[in-house]
Image 1 (cartoon, helix red, strand yellow):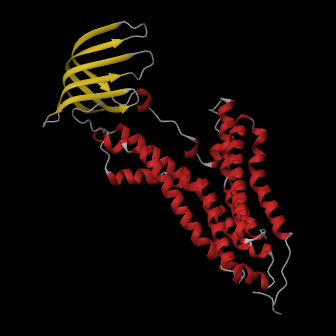
Image 2: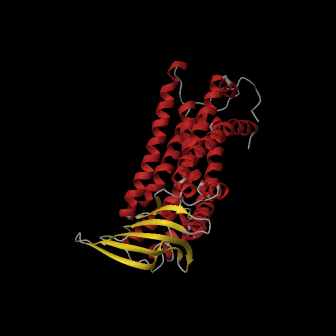
Image 3: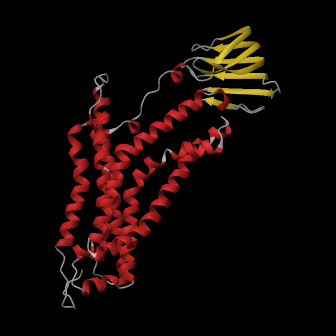
Length: 368
């Protein structure tokens, strides 16, 4: 790599890394707020909460990497222009394409990082995230039922207790269970206790009444001396299903024969190709930013127009990628377009930069 290219790469790297940390941090914070209830309702410790949500970082980084590279490249070249360094490069005889090699190297670096994240780090971390989340839901000690508070254990299951006694017993308990469609159950009990069952935590109740309202609206009430409520449910206690982000690329592109639903197979294949195509956006967007700055020849006051145009192109590329993914899930013949959008952008940018004029050198020697 020539000396000037290394200098350009260093210049672009600083704002890019800053943008990456800012974007990833903001998205991580917004996503973490979704899991605050694990601390409030399930008594999850703060260190374990931080570890759990940190496993989402690779998924978030994969999404924001192209945009961080775009912002960093745009800011880096704008700074070079504002400090007249672009004029110095051009005075040495460098063409726009040669000056844009900093963006090219940055894009290639980020594309490689994106492939590492997409093909290995993201599925590994996200699988650990879902396994830990699954374990938390199965652990008795993680379920913290506060006194005189309606606690939502899972969707459709709410528990209220009037008092927590020193020996671990619960007093004056209400359980409202609507997890089963068309069936609502309300249990009232004088006392109870959280216990560990074979399939997960259960709430054992003594001396109460069982009220059930069926689909026809009829209410039936039965007294009981002892009963138990499964706080996880059969649908959660069994083996969990894997989501696409947990699967490695081979599992996406070649779904197992056990998946007979053609729509599900097409969805997995399309997401597998998107996993391969999205890192190419990390190569395309820095070149878009470099092209907008280096090809802009207007006065300084109108530079914002080139910046706005570049931002519009970057947003259009991202939207096109997301839209084509959804369309490709329904029609796999559209899969090649997932690759065509970023690669086509790279070709157009390279053509514009190479076709730009080469500036005559003011020195006799060639730049290093």
